[in-house]
Image 1 (tube, rainbow, N blue to C red):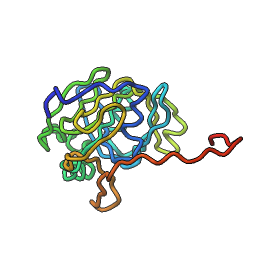
Image 2 (image 1 turned 180 degrees about the horizontal axis):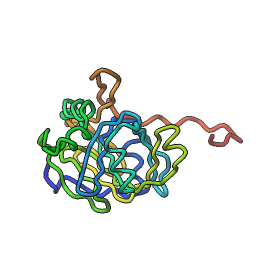
Image 3 (image 1 turned 135 degrees about the horizontal axis):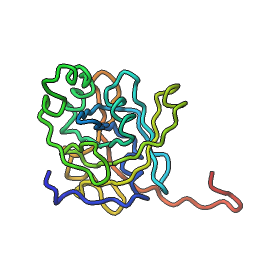
Length: 206
């Protein structure tokens, strides 16, 4: 994908990039080392300031780099990248790093580009990128493997996301994916707007 197809996303709309629950790729870098992994458990938390949450197991090398650097990136991969997601999600970046011969980016021939606000490498071919500053919460990190981040920069592929909305029609290969288990995924489906329901007097939201 050319740089011309990437567009900045307003931070108060960045939550919409993952609010539909896609599997994401998480990347981080520190001290000349970098890594990337897949994460099925990620979600938006707030929109002003924009915050996200992601679960990262203690054994992952990406978590080690994230905790050291204090920054990370979430990227939203596509149907066309499902094999890549499965590959980076089932291989060990730590083992590659300790071998000192390569890393996942070189091993899988990933094209990367620099972000605007973090050192985390961003993967070309995805349809959304959220650069995040780690909001350190040691208790929940250690107890639940849950990491919180504030989104400090966001971009999306204008072919399928613009004006704060996803629109995948005509771009099936760019649909986002949802991992179920064992290499089985579901692609994002048809978008639609709900008809306006009559309001009940005195009813409040929530």
